[in-house]
Image (cartoon, rainbow, N blue to C red; front, side, top):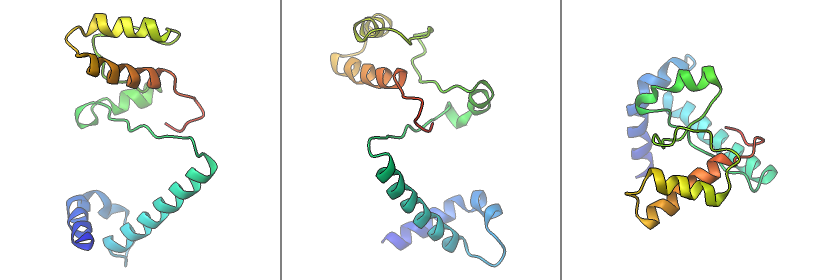
Amino acid sequence: MANRDGLLFLQEVADVISPAIPDGLYACDVFDHFSHWLKAIKKYWDTVHPSSGFWQVAPGEGARLWENFVDESIVAVGFNEIDQDLSGYSEKELLAILKEKYPEFSDQKTKVNFTQLWNFINLKFELLI
């Protein structure tokens, strides 16, 4: 099953990875090397930085904001109703802002979004973003 899924995945991304494949190599071999490299990097990273985490950046639909993020050296999260710099706010102040701007959120949704926003605001700059 895993081999079939891997081949289907390679077929889906073939036009993206094909230009990077050296002559004489197959896409499945390059992908296999990449997978082993990625596993080794993760093992190394977890050993050297055991408490580190990763954030996935999705700069808008179809990555439409990617160039802006790179040019401005920024990363943003999608709380469009909050149009202010939130650094320096206490947890209590941030929670009040979130409740004011998103009154339709349930208590659970407010809690989840607060945690995400609080963690984002308090990212340590030694993390790789």
